[in-house]
Length: 160
Image (cartoon, rainbow, N blue to C red; front, side, top):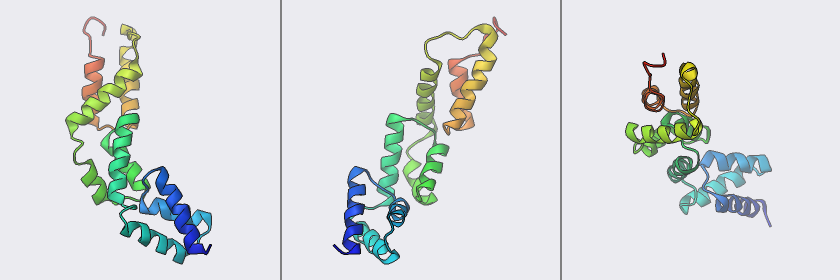
């Protein structure tokens, strides 16, 4: 088996596991030690057949994240860019994720984080700060973080 065929076989094995971005597949082929010509040929081959597409990869990535590890637009954008997806494609794919959908995701994530243990009055401010930090690290916008923390841990005049 020549090098180009070996690169095709290796790329196919990777693509059967899950969709890949062009940069991600290129990096994996380089790490495996294939020549630049074999890599270029492999990328062209799979892209021409629709098996290697950054837009399809980005849509799949966002769907998987929203199902299994919800996060905000900012973090999704950062992750996609780390995979080599262009900003334009990222914005296209994330266009459907409006602020209300992001808010619902944040509420879901925050409610799981808080659990069923009630927050004591004297610890409410600290709990709000911790929850806000958690949501911010998950990439939710400041407006969404503020709305979610106010809804789940409202300021209680009897406590503060």
